[in-house]
Image (cartoon, rainbow, N blue to C red; front, side, top):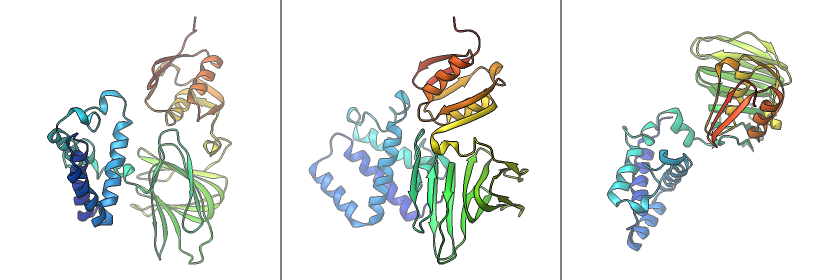
Length: 319
């Protein structure tokens, strides 16, 4: 997402204000000047909110990862804080340097969820969108079309009738999903994704090649950057996340753990030797520790918790 030059400049100024106000030596005059800057232009308020969002994001990073950036500012000089804040907005910094990258797009998107969070909202036309864990989207409605840009994660869309008869599209990477009066799921992942239709139909197109395919209710379709896959039937696992579950039917353990890892912060690792173990069951995504305990007791696995953010699953008896 390319920011206009005036927005980027406002963000850079917001970073300077952030550094000044969190330097520990800001004066009443500084705070008055900051309030005047905020009131001078709506862009300034938006830039400040984005700066605060980055600060919140960095504060949520465990331990030392956050320390060199925006935490503990009271112990550092104004020049050090300013250097860190500007680093985040520069072309060479660790955080804001990536404002063109997908990670930073997620911070500046219109709607997003944290890891483990699900959230539903209504669009201006009455359509609803349910965001799964760690998902971010942009909404672009105009006189010609209704468009969602799925930057990462997974959404369930229920479209509403539009008196203007504008097409409703979900775009993720090079793939476009045109809703044909429908309820459907789109998932974006590295190199591709999946569409599953629950009601009516969609048309999936690869923008680069022009290839397209219609997907009817009860069907799903994988895609990547180069091709569309074969149509498959939905099963009971499709969309189970909206009810807070993962449903596994003879699913390889590695695939199940990979799915569970989307709902918990930190690292979930497993021994490759147990990756092909077939697992069936219903596992809660709102309490992944309970899901891991069920796997441990039901399949003779060992779950080792090194910390809240580092869990290892291995095989063997648990004596």
